[in-house]
Image (cartoon, rainbow, N blue to C red; front, side, top):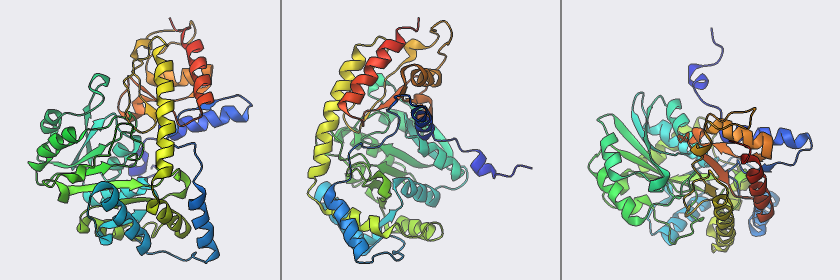
Length: 397
């Protein structure tokens, strides 16, 4: 008899974390490794946010917090959604969790019954499909291509919907592709969703502040579907607060209550100190996210320029987040005389072992012909990584 439950046994290990672990093992051996595998800003949390945390500690805000989050943080999020996105959410429609991943887990577990179908455009963030598995739902993956900027079309969505479809998961700006849906593109998808009253939408907007093309467009702005959209967001990417573990959802009151009920039986309220820091971050003027965005744009251009000079990398131009997701199928079947590249997993491992650059296979994101670079690293590290990759792949013939 298996000791581990079938539900846990069915889950895949996070490939982003796995590659990061392998690169750390190299580093322990004294090998210089450039880690471009993890989706984490390389900036420090701003000082005014850290100061708020020190203040909270000194004021002894160290007791259990309300399950859904402190009232002042809920109010700050409500004000942010109005100020930045033109959206109206009362504090009772918001639940704060231990990171956006828990927020996603809460929403999916609160919505999905056994065998409910969840539509996920691919490439997708690695945990979407695994969380659906955990809820005993069925993943319906819609493939997209680099030639279409990795965006799903209204027709693809309409063709994928069945009587069992319960949820659509959208992410813009996207992890892993960096693609951003325009307002018109989102409106066309909303028109399809509007025709199916039992279809809900998770709109993952965690990268909203890393946008190179203009104003962030939220899926919930379309009135025909607004009461069936749940926004996922947090402070990890926009404010360089990954380790603080603060994410949140905003949606209809009934789903907020369900998420709070579930969270009350699992983790209870998030870290009290982190919440006070997040409140100050969300209430701030947005200058820190803008500073990071400017740096990420420069790095994106550096990476696009560098990869364009290496034969075999087919790239689009991502418009947000801090990822590039090139098609590397050119290398499949090629060999250096000892190692043959059969797929993206082989390629990612080859680059780690030979060039000492950690990347992630697109297989983990539902796009087995691609790999993901995170360019949340210094210009010097990115330049060095590109040089090492260029030197390495010329051996594949």
